[in-house]
Image 1 (tube, rainbow, N blue to C red):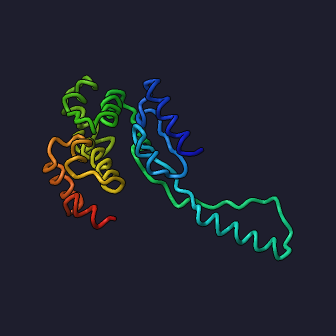
Image 2 (image 1 turned 90 degrees about the horizontal axis):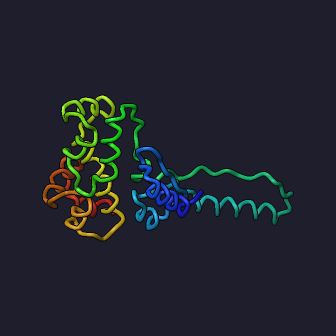
Image 3 (image 1 turned 90 degrees about the vertical axis):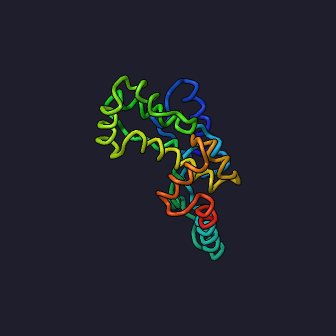
Amino acid sequence: AYDPLGHHLLEVARGLGVPVPGQLAVLGVDDDAVLCALGDPPLSSIRPDAEGAGFAAARLLDRLMDGAPATAAGQLLPPLGVAERASTDGVAIEHPRLRAALALAQARACDGIGIPALVRAAGMSRQALDRLSRRALGRTLKEELDRIRLQRVRELLLGSELTVAEIAARTGFAHPEYLGVVWRRQHGASPAAWRAQAK
């Protein structure tokens, strides 16, 4: 299990028409930031404790050099955590029409897809779809679209040198100013100011 395999699995799923994360969640290992960002969708990945493994190996070598007997027992180190990206950002949804709308939202939110397309995919009224969405997710379809887009904005603010205007264009926001309003509402600062504080 490692990031190149996860990246390959994303490509296979896309070729088979299996929506990620709608029907399949993909989680890699090693958190190769460049490779993970290139995934479609970006690949979530486990962050192993490489430094901890190095120290553990050095301690073991030191004991062996002092004459301690070698054993076949391994040592498990917990990971540092999971770098969460869009490939695992799914929720198990029972209602098939809501599931269809949310799968489309995940796949196309950053292309600027709007609520009318989600409503068409579900084949039901916006009001009924929003009721189902609130019940399942605790938020409306519009709030879910913004959440998906803002997650990608965060990844690009931290992992790229793109300008805020370029990030807005890549994440489905028609205008950088609107991205600024939505971002400030959630984070209390402009995207540029938030990026400067986070780095």
